[in-house]
Image (cartoon, rainbow, N blue to C red; front, side, top):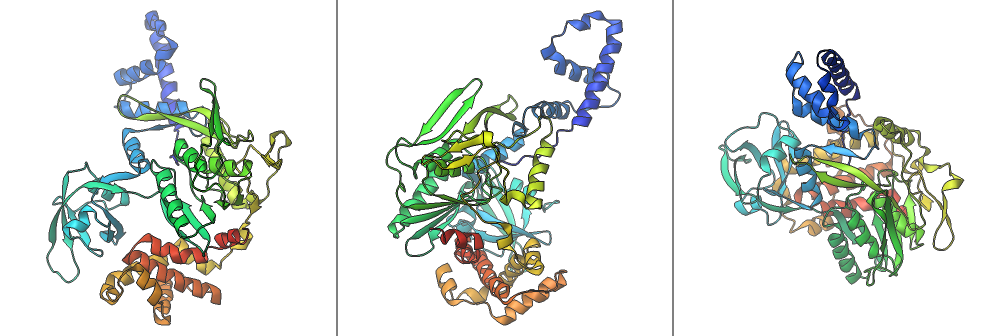
Length: 522
């Protein structure tokens, strides 16, 4: 499930159509030949009429886009229209790579700060360093500095060049670099590693074109390290490509078991079965889900649950059981049209109920479910009762309900602790600390050496609390356990800024209460 901005502008479009109908009625009195247009030509006729006769100048392309959105919104919440720019952006995200200069950046006080360069990437090759500030791009200082505008300026066709003016600490003048853009790989597997001597862990962020390849690579490496049981983390994974979900599920279940099937009015039923040679068909398996796990994540968790292959742990998933197919239009915009529903092996369609024409309510209902904390208790519809391979009862119609629920009440932190995260203050403080004290960390050979030898002292910890207070978050009600967790997070964020995300996750998983609960259920 890729989140879209559902703003159908029904009122505006209704006004436009109402005006057009009014003009048509007036026109009909003058020329009865206008009645010969077909129903299928109504939209074109109305837009032509607005172009010719509307009192103010209008943008036909914008009106057309709004009309298409208003049309699709009458179907279901997941049939959507994408502009050409949106199509390109989402294609870049989903193909597992993009063309760019290979830097991770952060906007600090209207300045583009390089957090780190991609190893072996274009920026590293020309000598750009972590901590550098990008002041000029192609000779100009960007007027609006936002993530989207910076990405737009730095991305470009492979082989094209961009000139950067860099401000580096200790050097009074700008340093000029010319960077040749190249393919930059993105990772769908955010982190994988061993949790203990025999337990592996894989965190999959989304289902891109490279997700199966990345999961398979992680499984091979973990098995080499002695893994015989696995936690597969699909929390917050909103889905993506159906074929990738099928290929990943195939690694876990035996040949001949049904993974998923789809059924549509014009497509008929299509079944996907497991083939032979899955990389992890026998060991103990736990799949972690939550309220933001959707679509492809629900296919895998439903497959594991219905085939009684492992335990599904967490909270009820989002509930998206509709399959979209993307149709490209002549101007490179596209519509994603629902062409089928998917069903788990037991026959469940887990799509949540929705009202046609009201996508806002669809998402508001989800938010209300989240806010009210009632996701932990589900009212079962006996008409949607199904059996797993071994005869256990499961239910459709509202997401995947876990075998073992982790209620929110077990995950509470103090208001102060939550505020530090909500405002991103721990990360911000640690980024600035690293940026101002890079020479202190030259003694560490790599990320592993840093994790083994570095610890956050009380002075640094108190400085963070003072920094938070200056930003309106004053310490109150902080437990001894939370203080220790904050120090560990500080160490993780420092490691992340200096080296790589994986060094943050190595520390963070020890603070993940849900993961610890999952581990206790092997």
